[in-house]
Image (cartoon, rainbow, N blue to C red):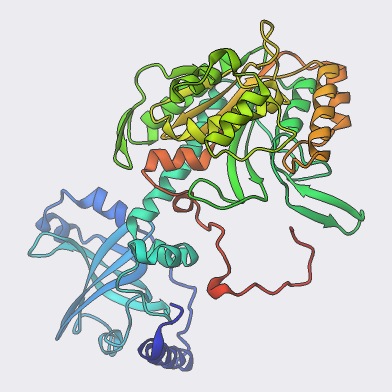
Amino acid sequence: MSGEGRTGQTLLEERRRKLAELRASGQAYPNDFHRDALAGELHATYEARSSESLEGDAITVRVAGRMLSKRVMGKASFIKLQDRSGQIQVHLERDRLPEGVYQAFKRWDLGDIVGVQGSLFRTRTGELTVRADALRVLVKSLRPLPEKFHGLADTEQRYRQRYVDLIVNPEVRQVFRTRTAIIQHIRRFLDALDFMEVETPMMQPIPGGANARPFVTHHNALDMQLYLRIAPELYLKRLLVGGFERVYEINRNFRNEGLSTQHNPEFTMLELYQAYADHEVVMALAETLVRETARAVGPGLVFDYQGTAYDLTPAFRRLPLEASLLEFNPGLEASRLRDRDYLRAVCERCGVPVKPEYGPGKLQLELFEKTVEARLEQPTFMTGYPAEVSPLARATDADPFVTERFELFIGGRELANGFSELNDPEEQDARFRQQVASKAAGDDEAMVYDADYVRALEYGMPPAGGLGVGIDRLVMLLTGQPSIRDVLLFPHLRPEGGRTPQSSGSSGTG
């Protein structure tokens, strides 16, 4: 651990001396021990067996793992080894082990990785245990494990040293096992619906598919500026043009924006596109996906998240954005919800910062994010987003001011975004030009013009629906975690101790 102080430094020096002794004896870091059993498998297979049955069958096993506890009692001792599946107890008897092994064992430290060969038996207290016939240190741990490595005071340290967090906090390991299970379930769910998983570029010449500020890098051989992708959307829709009618990607995206309990500069999204579908079809797909994932690998359909009860059983509420503004802002005039001057005055009254170039659609969205979003606790599909803030979504036939777009909110945060895709190349051209004008007026997150995407649409893209799901936020909900950092193995943090890492000289992101 960093900052261990004088006592910690003494422990480090002592452990290094022990490593030096292992090196001198030729026993440092061996790689010839082959484990044949896991702790969890042994408990599952033999937990019901009696002591007499185990002794009679003389079941020999080879186990290995990190030593987390050590109880020395004269001529006999107990240790606990932890492997990826759990923990198993080991019993050591001085007179049963080869000459000198027991005395050497007494100098081993918690955190050392140990290999054991022996037979199964049950102690007087009934615990399944390995009676060691041979054991050795496979890896010397030079740093002592912390006695306590959890709780609010140590949160940032846990994130920085996730490797220690995973060793000492089994509940953290379970969160990430569940994360993997969630992603595996999503893949099975989509594969069963005949979606094809694909891969699209992570470095792109144009940052498209979302309103976000990109990371910028440089390709030396081509001498060109590239952007880490903010979304795979425009590439996936090119595949619709090419004839792949159901595609998805579980992708890593990068957005050069702030950090919070909900935001990390790089994050994982599911994006899918289905030809001959609209936003209603995709909305139903999103609802089923969330519900079935919660049922299969999450907490079930009824659960508690951060002190609030949730029920995914009823149909998710559908609420138009303009209706939500009226519901959560008593006194708003319904007849003036598209009046730019009126909305600007309302935003200023509510403390919502606005820019001169904002139109009524953008002002509606800013007001929604300030006054409504965090209050959408139970599952709610927000619908009817303005075209001004939805440059890739199809406008409704009845009211071109709004689009066939939705966002899913649970627990006051957005989990998914979807819409009927805009497949009219001339309309898309006009929307891109509006975005370019917004960027020129100072909107850093406005899209740039993608001429090749417009060209692809000119070949003809079938009518389609698209969906993006924030995997990290979904995992937060289904594992009960309050922060996105709790579901990312290695979240981004400020430099440790305020230091800025030195550049290696290679091109990086900026």
